[in-house]
Image 1 (spheres, rainbow, N blue to C red):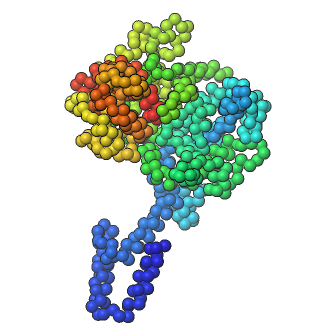
Image 2 (image 1 turned 135 degrees about the vertical axis):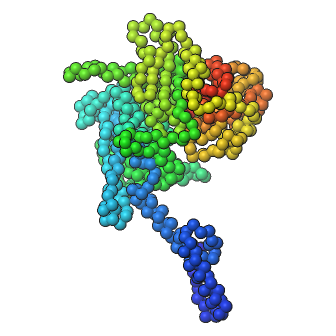
Image 3 (image 1 turned 120 degrees about the horizontal axis):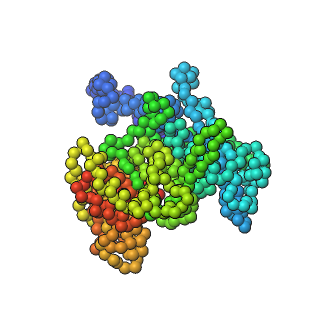
Amino acid sequence: QRRRDANNNETKKGQNDSSSVSGKARASSSWTECLTSLVWSVGSDARVDNRNISARTVSTGSATRAQQDGHRGNYEGDDDGLRNVAIMGLDCEMVGAGRDGNLSLLGRCSLVLLVQKARSNADQEDSGGRSDEDDSFELQTIYDKFVRPSKTVTDYRTTWSGITKDDLKGLGCLPCVPFDVCRREVSELLASFHGKPVLLVGHALKNDFEVLHLRHPFGLTRDTATYRQFMRAGRGKRMLQRKLSHLVEEELGMDIQSGGGGHSSVEDAEATLKLYWKARSGWERGLGYPLRSFRSSPALGDDIAPLVQDQWPPLTMYLDGCNLPLGVRCNKQGRSKQGGETTISWQLISKTSTRGTTEVYQQVDWIPILRSALASASPPAFDKIVVMFDGAKYKGSKEQKVPKLTEIYPNMYLESTDVGVMVDDVLVERCCCNGSRRDSGQGSSSGSSGPLVQVDDVIDALSNMSDFGYGAVDPRENDTLDCYAVVRRKGGGTKTNKKLFEKFNLRRPEEGALCLTGMTARLQKNSLQTAKDLQRARVYDLVEYELRSRANVRNIIVTDDILLADRLVNDCSGGGNNPNLVLSWRQLQQMF
């Protein structure tokens, strides 16, 4: 408004002074017009002071705003990467268990697929180049089932869930399956859909993940409850979440959850998809368009051709199942009446989950998370994931739970060692002695050992302020740091220091190593917080910090065994051909 008033005042002043303009001023005006026309003839690339060509600046700005408005309204011209993923909406209805029914259990699960319609040029001309939000997509329910909980239900919460006792007995309008079957089927759908990674949309997805005992990659999750534009301001700078029904009524003009039969998980999932579709342009722009890293390949049909940064070769991830809170479940389905083969599905279950700095009891299936990491085209790139267990654990059992070596999914393997062979020795042999196999043809390395630095230097590197000559950093991308820090404990310290070292898996001096890296944005953020905690503790003489180059890393080993971590990080760095990056269980959860 102030700019508009100023422009009006200047216009009126110019009109009042026009009668008294001298011939010299008229000549100056003519010269300005000639200069303006000359600038127009040169083109938009000419850099001329905007004060001399104010008319051109106004017109160019209007054209730019018109192009931006068209970019927001017409999806066909956008390059936000949404056509490279399968967009699904998830919603669950819960029932209660326990004495007062306060323990939430899964009672119904629904998945809705958003199918984007292709618009022809004729349709765009008829609509004036604008895309109608209601006509640009359609919704398809691909999964909707009642779930029979593993515990006794004491409160069906019919008023809110719409679930009755007959529904969970299989007498309702939808099929009813056991909880393990539902979790396996949903995890299969969330891992990939027609070869594309799944972008999951929902409202308060944290609650749905808790009852499903599943997790989904953070970068492929869009939660309408935590999107800032959909939240309301509280006291101070706090932002509060809103109810889905209120949000849908305000943003879409729709009325949901108003019937007397309880909520519908399909209706809620569709509402969240519509909310996301309406705000998709600003949402993805605010995130820096992370889905652009997925590119469709016409030669592969629905498959995705990964477009990963060329500066880093693919990595191999090893999970030390002996020293991680992981268990394997094998689900076998019998032969069909047509004589088909027995189908086997695997689950990799952890019974604990990290929330911030605390560890809570929560069963999570890691198979869909690891499959998404393999299928993702965004850094870091993985070409193989191997989960290893000790064969002596199954000695004497009638059936070996983990086979010698089996490919449960493409490029994902379960492996158990021979009796008497330790997993530690196998990992050291593979990660430290086979470096020449991967580095053949890439030239000799200069060595993995880097300079010893102070904790302030590590903080600067992780906070993207300086990378000490290793390279520049882009905070919007994963795995862009050209260095990582290795933290070693040298001395004992006080009781307070020992508690801090125990938290970071540095239990004894001269044993173990902690790697602070930026493989993903979340892991880099937590690594930075770890470095600041060490700085705040003032353990200068008890800890040493070494910077190493990211360029030579080929293997990521996830283990909580400090002796194995010490062997992989310190003893396997000779020659620098194949240095290893070791992460703890807590860091793995922070990574995805």
